[in-house]
Length: 218
Ligand SMILES: [Fe+2]
Image (cartoon, rainbow, N blue to C red; front, side, top):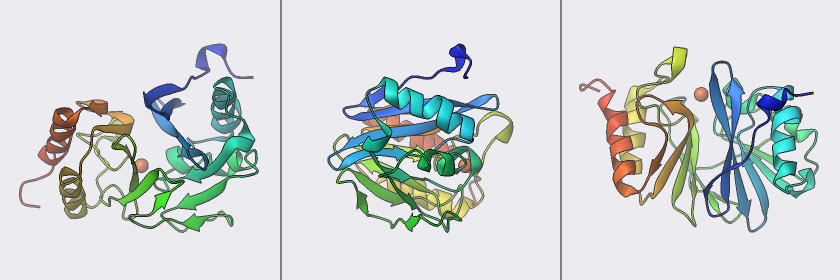
């Protein structure tokens, strides 16, 4: 049984859009929940079987979302704190399709493509830099970018900055600067601005701050 103090709750981000903050080491990682016209979509899956069965599924049920309501499990990238819980979640989600921007060892996985709109709500945005394949999802009705780990600011916790491809990262941030965004929601509490930028001015500042942590010559 989970420690009652560890039980998590859905936090509303915008209309029809929520997040679950799931403990991960001394940090948290994020599972986003979108209520889409064609069913519920989960974006990312936290880390472990415990996360899936004892934290995520109970939090969904608490909010009135049954496992059979979930039609999509989308992953932003293949790191363990985002994709690790996926096989355990899928055991309980009989109607969910798994979509990933990388070659998944899970046989049920189908690819995701840049620009593709999933569930009539979530547009896939390829944003390499953290990894080569990392994607964010643009929530079209609210112009909210669910950035996962694509935007690192100055890094997080002991991991610090997770930019493995700085030249790609710079291009990705500039791509976002050219998009109409009302909000950014990252997967971790990145230093120094945290996980949420609310409003166009804050979005611009968030993106500019991401660039400020890159060496000038790149
Ligand atoms: Fe990551």
